[in-house]
Amino acid sequence: MTLDMPQTLPDAAAGFSLNGRRALVTGASGALGARFAGVLAGAGAQVMLAARRSAPMESLRDRISHAGGQAAVTTLDLAQPQTIGAAFDAAEAAFGGPVDLVLNNSGIATPGLLLEQSDDDWAQLMAVNLDGARRVAREAVQRLVAAGEGGSIVNVASILGLRQGGGVAAYATSKAALVQLTRQQALEWARHGIRVNALCPGYIETDLNRAFFASDAGQAQVKRIPMRRLGSPSELDGALLLLASDAGSFITGTALVADGGHMVSPL
Image (tube, rainbow, N blue to C red; front, side):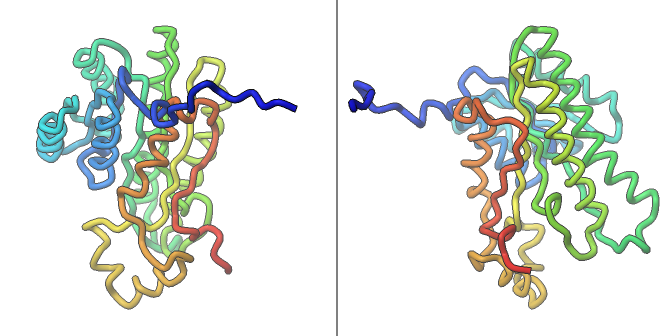
């Protein structure tokens, strides 16, 4: 038996290139959103930074531009659906075509027990984490279908969408719904050449949670992670690029977990 070997070895890294792609990143004013936007720009995408607060994004845009990338800024408030279409209009005007890569990263968390959480807090969280992501994806797909183009959508969920946690019922429920929404979107939009996947991070260290994880309660949670440590934002880069780029061209409807083994830890 002879093996059909290529004359040259494949350039696996080429599949991760985002050259020519037009991206929109929601929640780009936060720590993870800024990291994600930088990664996409570093891979060659033109990136529209979208969030409620423009000042942090303007600084990020300048850093991306200084590093040789392309980025622009628009305001987006998922609690005000009319701003969604305006954000896509701004991206099209800036980049000369429809957004073909969406990173649904916006999210809020309101900790609390189910018996103590108000209806207003629950509704607000669902409006951003679930309905906001749904509206952003729908806007992108409507425009891509009209233009006859394909694309990729990455919904940022969480391992709490796949497993329970104490005092985070609303957040966990929103992320579980987002994972299921991802699968439904993937099913319906595959025929249009549009892939939809969910990225499910575990505990990632940021400025917002560093003090908690340094506490006794936080350290107790860290000990439940098989790797016995928190993840860093940079350790989500590979997973994001796989889902966003042609390197993952046959991947759709999946929930990719990056959590140091937390999901396989024993009960």
